[in-house]
Image (cartoon, rainbow, N blue to C red; front, top):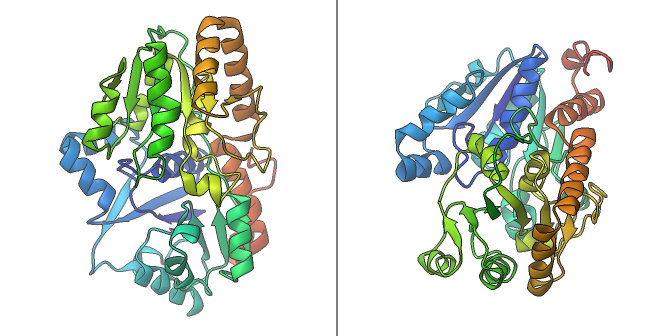
Length: 376
């Protein structure tokens, strides 16, 4: 089949974690023999900031790291109708311009027989409700929501015809353990600053434990204000800014433990959505300790796959314990990796996508869907 994905950016993962997941999904579709195209706007915020921050070389890295992937850049004069004329499945991400979301919906209404899906991977349904409510989704065949609590919100508000839970996952072709790499430092955290959605939590669950335990380690991510960088400088953690996603597995492998600090909207209003870094860290076989969030969908086995820290003091204790007990750390990492490989890879999500297409796909798609055995 021919898949077309509208994304904020495929080439840039600067403050744009959804690019990680879509790359993995597209790579798996290609490996199964399907044709894929990605389309992204010419002045995408993530890509423009990546070039400003890192220069053209960062875009060249995408080509080198993912040679099988290609993206089409569109502007105001782009002919979307022609681009989608041969598509079987079209997936439109929620950061797409609202007018274009409506335009593609009208194409579906006016006779195009592709299956049209809307993909929501953010908390705007809670934090910017009116923006989502005003999107024209009535012509979309289905909604892909990256958590059950988000799916329920769509159902309650009547946004869309059919709504499906479609969690993000790890591209385990990329995210995998690297046992040959020496674990030379204590702690790594990879995460962006965001919009002050977890500034207090970063101080409590990362900076203070690192200072008290005198940890060595690394922090990577973007949009850190100067006061946060200055506070990090009082610890043994080195702030390194943006990191190419292809470099993350090696970065994890160089450290003994990592932490997860969820953004506040997910903790307070969208339980059960851990965001993609949890999947990726566990896929790399690094022990993980998380600040509190509600695993409402039983995605993992808390206490076996990773540890929950109640507060900053508890986080400090858990980090110290794992660093001192290599056997416990290894057992935790192995359990987390086992769960990812059993349930949470991009291959699993492509299987789920085909099952969703069985429920809401057009006749054109139904005729081409692989048998369950062929989809493995």
